[in-house]
Image (cartoon, rainbow, N blue to C red; front, top):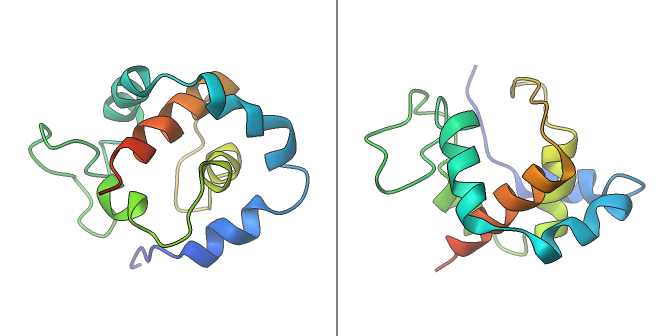
Amino acid sequence: MKHVFSPALFLGLAAGMIAAPLSGTAAAADAQSGKALSLTWCSACHLVSNDQAQASDAQAPSFYKIAQAPGLTEDQLIAFLADPHPKMPGMPLSNTEIGDITRYISTLKP
């Protein structure tokens, strides 16, 4: 099945209780740690870095494409990673790790 990146999905997940307890997570986040975590957890499907040869799933959006999504905020990314959609595997990420990955993706904005 085709993976389609949808900013609307992020907007829906950001609503409600998910984002509230985690929204402060990004404030002290570490982008370098987020890159390392992304290479470990996300690079199996996504292109997460320009020093990565290629993603194994050409249908999964690159982190660069995610970062360029109009109106996408760190809080929305945090909410999405806290409760990923069904196509993503369950990832036992801590709030700190979620914040770090979110901060790393934010550094990829043009």
